[in-house]
Image (cartoon, rainbow, N blue to C red):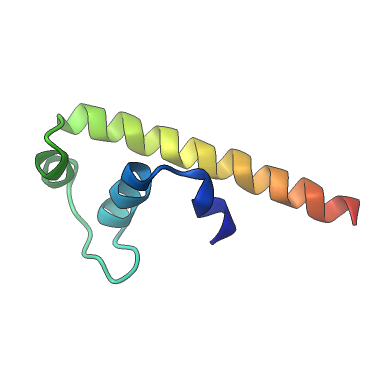
Length: 68
């Protein structure tokens, strides 16, 4: 949950919709794009960006844990 705080509200909502998180149903890129008024390609780009941020944040948390 802590790593989710590294994301913007829009990025969180995109991931929730795309992957069916927090009881949300899984949605297509087109569905998510329609909600945000963006193309499916732009939603895909934002999804990739958000997942990259999560990976990087998770790595930082693991490094902090290893130092203890």
